[in-house]
Image (cartoon, rainbow, N blue to C red; front, side, top):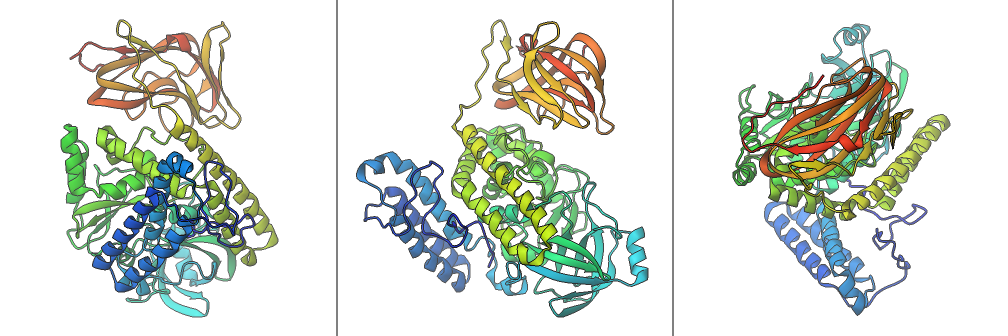
Length: 632
């Protein structure tokens, strides 16, 4: 059974689970010995009914073992909930909160089966591997010739011998892995993929066909992938399990690694009734509307039919019909949770924001596509990430453009936030994981990870505070137009550079302005979010630049105006120059849409000023053709 380590609520010393749930509203915590009388709000009755339905659903469709497990969980969960004292006046005030708590506790009943969609396969898919021991010792032995081969063709599987806890595995397929930021050569600290049956059919490592050993060069805590995996697991989104390993290569100690379960038939079989569907991997930044590499499946190698149906549904112009077409090809329920969790834990390099680090499984049992998360080594880095940002992923954007989709996403986000994102519980889990690593690390390595983990705990706390503020804030409003012109306000700084600056101040000639000062790698901006009805619009404003040097990589360098998730943008200003007017035109093709207007600087040096009084939105006459204005 999957190990969702987020679940226990630990005491202040992190020693043992205690029978109450942390409150995010700063109420007094009940004493451990306190017990309450029998007044139970309606929310708990709903929760008890929900648990009963969970038992019934799993009893019908899953093994008796799982059904008994869920049945055994229900009474203690209800007992814990009923032990919280609530007076009659408090009942009325807390009724909504109890409903949320009831939903949260219902999630716990689901946690027990979060990774058990096909329990019969559990024994053959790494049961008992994850969680004990906390760190595996893995020795990899390569012949000199094969070692040289990995230096030349790093992605090609070569055979190796592997030892782990007294077990010996012959002819294990090994290749190097990693992207631009994380790839390391074989003579450094490489990330590795180990396929135990690549050259030895049927061979498994504790029931696992494939594992990944990630060097974690982009996560000094070595914990983010595991924390993200446990949170997605708790949200009922299929996700690979994570552990840790100390790796040795031909006698050379490589150090600590993040050990991750592979996306294999065994993995699919644990989560779905059928494991013969197509599993796709994103490549080269492709979204679902471009060819994806198929890793598993029984159809033709280039089979993209399901992806083509998903793309057609996502671009359907009739929003009511789009929502129905998405229901037919997409597991909408899981996708809403997938979106919510990516945003909640700041997975900015995932599907929704980066069209990266995801897999797709076309489940033949339901004929629906399920999104699977991956590559979660940079979580929690942006505490102020909006919970409803401009989505880059085609399917995520398609969902958010549909009013019902936007409403369901908001409801799902809030329910998962209340149920899962309690910073005290998450930081306790971080500290627990660090303590589990301690016996396997040198003092130097432990002190470094302990220090980095403390920073991660601060990021988690800051994220919870920021999300609570966002959720309590007002919804974006429609601007007020006077003679088809609306002023833009409510600007917020985003991605302030470490050695740069974002200020609301006066320009050298006295204009009230939004200022961005760059450091060596800056992609910073001022942003405001509004809602607009269908139509054509233009944003324009005066911009001044001083000593702006373009970045040595990427595109769209300099200062510019743009609208998030739209293709159009203004001209880009670099160098030094006086105030110049910039403009860009865009179109809203749905009845109403939430958009983000951006004043941006992408540079390695210099600064830009955006005249606040000149930043306006112009509503264009109905039927006017889209023609992007670029004034140079």
